[in-house]
Image 1 (tube, one colour):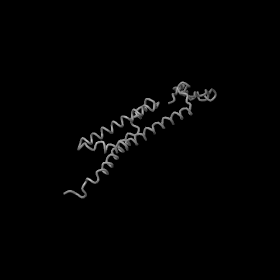
Image 2: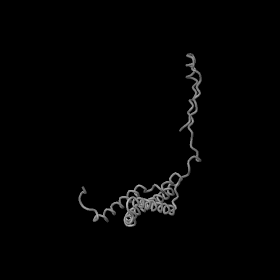
Image 3: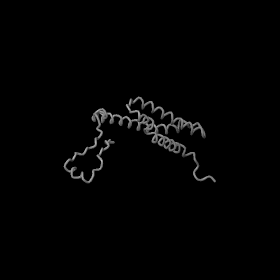
Image 4: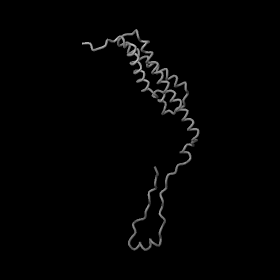
Length: 158
């Protein structure tokens, strides 16, 4: 935001001074605008920044697709791993398995050695988390239904 100096004006002239004013005119002061110094603007090298952003986006995309593929594989595996567990314990075991696999992807994300600014550090966790959760649950439900389709009696029990 520009800062302006207060304009210092002379007192209001008297009617007889108006003739003198046209003869003795002072140039008006222009307000001073705060200028940015070279220290305020960091030097930017657009080609280096573009290359870094491209590399960062590539690694974040890799992390996203890793989580999507692991969600599908882990959801399918959960159907067979927790086959022997019955009832409520099966559900909690599967959700725990989902959390463990997601935590493993956090370690993979750290091994990608992404240089993210402090404000973007949470991208390690949030990148693809919604897709991961919903694909895991969807795959787990669909594969469980397909595996157990023969065991369910057809029709409505009254």
